[in-house]
Every structure is written in structure tokens, then in C-alpha cells.
Amino acid sequence: MHTSQETFSSGSTHCAATVYRGGSAPGLTPVVVMGNGITLTRRDGIPAYAERFTAAGFTVMAFDYRHWGDSGGEPRGWVSISRQRQDWRAAVAFARALPGVDPDRVALWGMSLGGGLALATAAADTRIAAVITLVPVTDGLAAWLQPAPPAHVARLLGRAVKEAMTRRPATMPIAGAPGEFAVLAAPRRFPASPASPPDASGATKSPRRSSSRWESSARSG
Image (tube, rainbow, N blue to C red):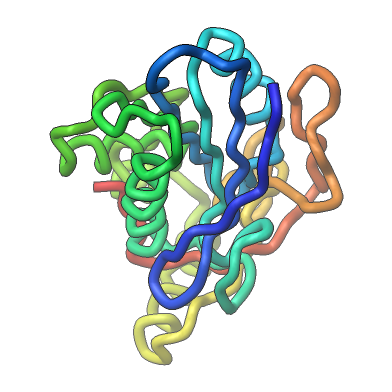
């Protein structure tokens, strides 16, 4: 297996990607386009999956969303659902044009928010051959309406109103322990950090808290 670092255009900037290829397989190969979950990059857990796909004869292209990882885009750390959907479409177009790839055998792989976006991408593109999702976010509204302490709800609404009025992303913690104010408040949470690559098992080591810019109108569909 060998890898190459690539970039492709999305919007007014670029997305960073890693392309994994196996040995010299005869003919064109199918390709798996891989996008991670909220705040995660292509280096967080994905390489272990990519190696398995490559060993099975697939070409793999894993990418970072704009504003994250090695991709361009300002401000940094912004979760924009609309932009990430554009990134998925741009990634698929780039993967189809890779040398040695069969453009009619493109599969999508996504986890969490990335899983929901993979499903949305496939629904809009009838040429997608298959979709693999891990715990996909399929209903953004339901996720936002999960029970939460009233004080947390008020802070979330305050940030949403601020973003709507200023037209600038509102900053809030992306992860925290149960009871803390964060988008993801759970005992085990895994926001990506450029300084925290996955360990040998593919698990991501995470900081206790990580700040993210969050698009208040988040929805996967």
C-alpha cells in the first residue's frame, strides 16, 4: 500500500486529502470516499479502515472538511453543515477523476455527522454505488432538541441568536463531561485535536474540552 497527499477545490479554498492505493490491480478499481465526524480529521481513526479497504482492492480517498485539519478556510474550527455538504460533493467529483478509478463504482464512508452527510450526498447523486455509515446523524433537529438543563438551552439559544444577528459563527465548547455546557456532553467523547493522533488501535486521544465554531442552523438533511 502507498499513500499520496492531495488537495481539491471546494468553494473558494481547498480541502486536503489522503489517497490510499494497494498493489497493481488489473483494470479500474472502485474507490471509497471517507469523511469523519464532527471536529475529526482524516488522520483520526480513518487510516486503520483505509488500510483494510485497500487490502481488499479498493482505492481510498479520505479528506478534511474546510476549516479543519490541513484544509483551508477561515475561521478555523467552524462546523458549517452547508459547507461540509459542498465538501462531500467536491470530494466525490475529485475521487471520480483519480487515475485508475472506476467513476461508476464510488462508495461513501462516514461516521457520526459525516455519516449523515454521506447519506445526504448519496441521496442527491444516483451514481453513488454504496454508502457505509457508523452511528450517522440523520436528524439534526432531533439532536438539538434532546433534553438539556434549562441554563444550557438558554446559552445555546443565545449563541444562535447572536450568530443570526451578527452573521458570524458563534463559538462554543464542542465536548465536555456530563453536565457541562457543550455540544457533546458524554463520559466518552472524541473531538479531534491536531496534536492528538489516533493510537495504534485507531482510537482518538481527546482533550477534556475543545472549542469549535458551530453553525447554529445545523442539520444533516
